[in-house]
Image (cartoon, rainbow, N blue to C red; front, side):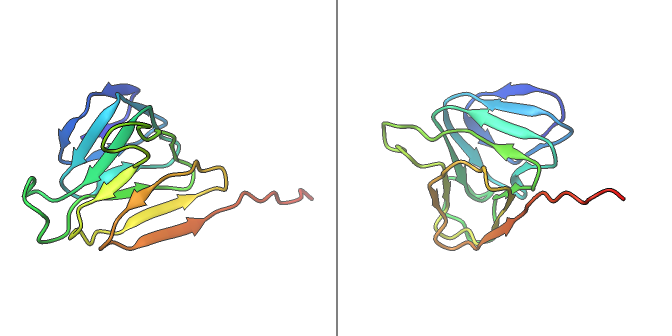
Length: 139
C-alpha cells in the first residue's frame, strides 16, 4: 500500500506500507504486522505518528517464522516516525520487533531529533546514517 495523502490505519496485517509525498500516516493503537519488502518505508518529507504502536516485521509465510527475507523498516533523512510504543501490556516499550529469522536490514537515515525507540532485530543489520543540515554562506 502506498500512502500519498493523510490517512489513518487500524492495526492489522499488511504486506507493506510506503508513505510519500508529504503525507502523514496516523496509526491507531495496536500491533501492525508487515510481511513483505519494503515493510514500512517512510520517505522524504512524509511522517508516521501514533500512540501505543508496535511494528512486527515478518515474512509472507506469517504466522510461520521467516525462512527468507521479509519486511524491513526504512526512514529517510527528512522523514519522521514519531509513533510511541505501548506503555503497558505484552508489548510495553517495544517500538519494533523483527521476526528472529528475518535478515532484512533496518535503515535509519535521520537527524539528531529522532525519538528514543526500542528495537528488537536479532538477525537483521541496523544501518544508521546520521545526517546534518549545513548552511552555506551566500556570496
